[in-house]
Length: 251
Image 1 (tube, rainbow, N blue to C red):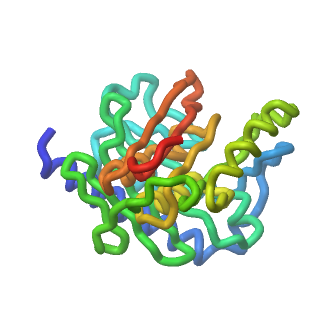
Image 2 (image 1 turned 120 degrees about the horizontal axis):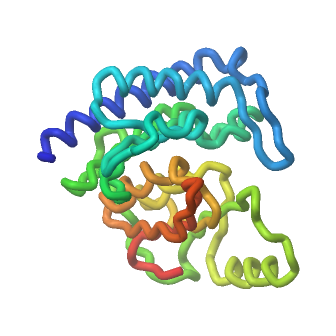
């Protein structure tokens, strides 16, 4: 595939993300309706309708299949190259009027992040990246990771997924690690956390048990802005462990 091909696909993702994000903002009152609720997770009408919009937009102009959070795989065999869509990353934040959520669209090839688009619609901030050309932008202004290389000067972003262990040993290890950083933030959106690393607002984001659709667009943006995106422990349900850094600081 050529550079021009990827650039065209990136424009498809940008258009789809902008349309979905604006739709979520404009129709929030009717979309903020729970259709499923589990002890540590929430699904809204917003998730389903935004995903449908994105899939319709992309499938009408792109030949690649889709893996989406709500509907899964568009075909049984996704092949080497496919879209990965999270229509609303940070659903719980959206439902409670916490303005940290986004639309996230990525393209992968051989399970490597190629393109990433994340639309922080509350702030009208569009992050986009082409990991082939190593270009990453926030609202068309090029971004890069920070140069901080010491934990005592760095910001860690992390989260507590649904299956987090709260056993004493696990909590002790977590607290000991947090104490080595200057600041620690939990913001409730993997996509936005990734953008914070890519644009130099924080130095490292790590979380276990997130899903591919939560982080693949962010991985492309981070790598394109000079950072390092480690994705490990792939499971059949597309759950993964990740460490995203500015590449100047270690876990």
